[in-house]
Length: 447
Picture: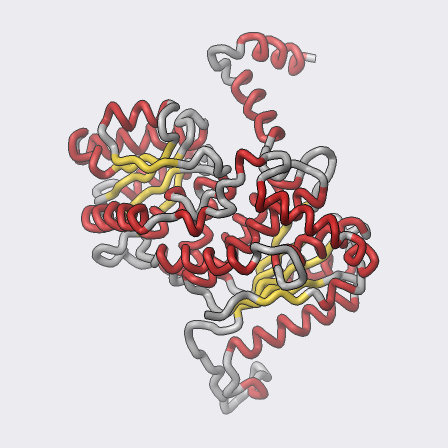
């Protein structure tokens, strides 16, 4: 099977000295990730995870997916952050662009998402969509008390129980949570929900290859065995330090560019199906590296669409950016541009060409323009959009993230800053146990 290819040619000469000087640091970081000897080692369960996923677990997940497929036209996946973005990224990348506008096929339920926001219109409109429909719920939360998913689950659980009765509803709800503790674990045990475990040593943003991501992806009708096989391939490819390790090379290059003053990385795709993959990538790198006053800011664009909005800034704005382009070598279809006798639009010179050929020339032309404009470019070429390739890409970015974080000098596996907004929100909502914080924030707001 083809593996992804990384090309740093058009980034290297922007930070050649920094790249050559960080080789030893990269080797040490790869070793730290592989051996678990550095900070955050208790959250390195994802490193060997692809090979540890058993055939029994995959079989159980497929059986659960089949039950939901048999009984549901819609399955709502409730979660936030890593409990939502990984599954959303893979399902979007593998689905028809207009799947949401087509009625679900038999035994191929539409996977919807909730609990990733606190939008009153969003949850109300979702309830309206589900009214009178056959639906089930996959609820994902380690604690069961995270505000956004807890609200969504309470509302949708009540709707499901009212629609089909409490006894039948329990067979349409699957909980993915802690093995032993937490509110969701307690509720699942009391109500009799089928459950899967979020491993203690895998953080949320690295959890797409656990039941957190695998079950919704299987419910959507995609091959989770191939997804895992692609991840295994990339796990083996990135195991040892050295120039043949693409994750190490990517981590080295982005750190070299950061040291040379490039503070923003833009992940670029030329396929609209990869939009949510970029969203997953932004959480992975933003939450892993943005701490201790350090970190490359992760941004993304969908091209060529955003060339007509963000293109000017990328071409001529402040030179603190670099780009990483995901290029899909082989589209799944062939679409050619027809000849037109009048040629009023002036594009007969493209007649007979594939649409993807035009897209690839736009990709190449944009890279040349941006590099000449002072924007370093790295290119990640993948064979196609399929489960195996996405498994490779997911593991590649995960491994590179751990290496890059250690090279940067941070613990890439904690997220202390995420709690700041929660403390303020709980104080403002007068949550029990936050009385002192409530008084303090009210005093602050009154000044």
